[in-house]
Length: 302
Image (tube, rainbow, N blue to C red; front, side, top):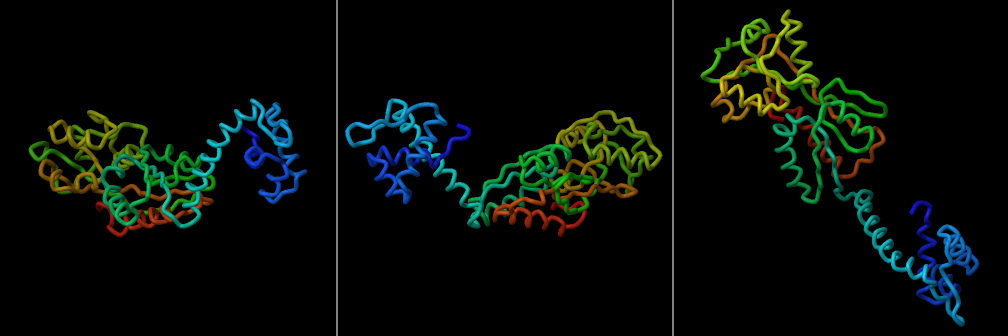
């Protein structure tokens, strides 16, 4: 209940437990007038009489008995809350809410998360996927602790740390359309191309690459999932531009031919976090782990 003073509730429970205002005051290291004032303020806040005297003993009224039942649960909830929050201030692990794009979640984060789990088994991590604007808003609103996003990204009160260059490549089915050693916009303009759906930054980056090469591409299909695009390419339905990290595994290379783009095409990934964010141990270690991604170079599996 809004405006309910938990100290006043505790004073009330002590009066009932010990049977008198004076005993409760002594136990709580307060004066008797102070206890009487707290009980009076609590009764005023709730709009009911909580205590009555039976002889020399203070006893709860019907309303007081009802409050007493709830007070035990309130104490339990507060104790649980304090225990939960204590780990954030004592150097314990805590919880991390990380937002990123689907491609990074699938291809970059698993080894990082595996290492974090090995080193910090008590760390609780939740992953939310979305586009850059959604993740930035989540970080600003404190719904997310940290984001791994595609630049450009900005927001009031945010710290943006560029991390790595994520290279794109052209892919086609091994038994599909042949691609030259280096693929230009003009080459793809003559072929059926499957693209990411409009609206995301990945599509914007690819469209700009075509535009700068003098090509206005009309894709044969557009999808929002990198895995779906890979499956369609493997089926021989077209070629595609994908992040190199999405086709690095031997299983992918068995069915796909991967070629570099000319000119080379990159998107830059960055960490976003609130400048006023309190960095508990788990969050500090997550940031440190994310920063190791840039050691593996453009287009790598990091």
